[in-house]
Length: 346
Image (cartoon, rainbow, N blue to C red; front, top):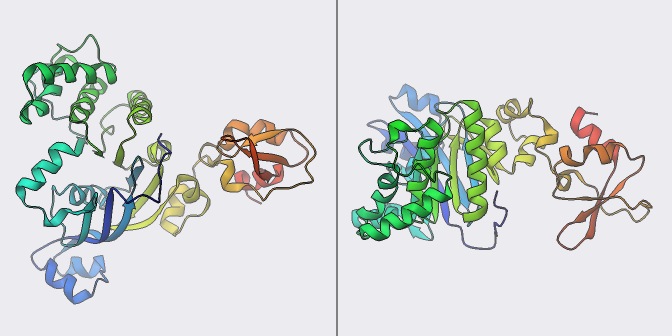
C-alpha cells in the first residue's frame, strides 16, 4: 500500500460541501435549509439525501477507502466525483480544476486521460478476447491497433493473466474477469483510479487474492485511489485513510488505526468494536515519548503493527525503545502494559 502521501502538495481531489439530493424540490429545499440537511425531514418532503455536506481532500498516491452500509451514500459520492452523476451543490476539484464547470468535451478528455474506473459489474465485452477487451479503450482514444495491443499485453502481464490473453470472458473465472477489468482501466494510465465495490461479487478466497494483487499493483503504480466498499475488514486492509459514511454524512475520515483507537461517533464505534486491534494499530499510534532511562538494547519499529512485534513486547519486563527505520533514530518508547491496555482494555 502506498504511504508516499505528501500532505504539503496540492490535493488531486478536493470536495467542498458537496451535496447530492434526489427529488424534484431538492435545490429549493437545500437552499431553504442553509446547508443544515436533515435526511428524515427531506425524506418526508419527497427527497432522498445521497450525500450530505461532504468536504475532504485526497492527495497524490493516497488510497482513500469510502465505506458504509447499503444506502449510506458511498457510491453516490463516487459518482459525483467522477461526474457520472451531477451533484446538487458544492465544489469538486480535480487537480485544481472545477469539475462541475467542465463542458462535455472537457469531461470526456478528463475521463479518457486521467480517470480509470472499475465497478462491481465487470462489464467485459463478451465477443472480444481478454487482449481485445483491454485494448478497447486505447483504440477509442485513437491509438493504433499495434500500439494498443502491445500496451494491452503489458497489462496482461501486470495483472497475472499471461497465457489467457486469447480467452473470451466466458472462459474465465470471476477473479480472472475482474483482473481484466482492472487491466482495462489501467491501460489508459490514469492518474486517478475509482473502484466501486470491485471485489464484492467474488467468493472470500478469491477476494483476498484480489486484495493482495491490488496492494501489489498499488505498490508498483502509486495511483491516487478512491475505493468504495461495505466491508470494514477490506477497508482496514487496503486504506491509507478511511471515510465512514451513514445517511450521506461522512461520520469520520481518518487513518485505520485512529478510527479503531478513537471512534468519533457511536456509529463508528459499532463498526470498530470487533476489530482485532493488533492487526490494525501501529506502534507509532500508541508509543510514549523517548525514555532515556531504558537500558535494554531491544528496538522495535514505529511502523510495525502490534501483531508483528507482540511477542517481543509482551516478553519484555521493561519499556522498549521505538525507532524510525529510515534512520534508526529513537523516536519513542513503549511499555508492555500499554499494549495490554490497548488490546484488552484497562
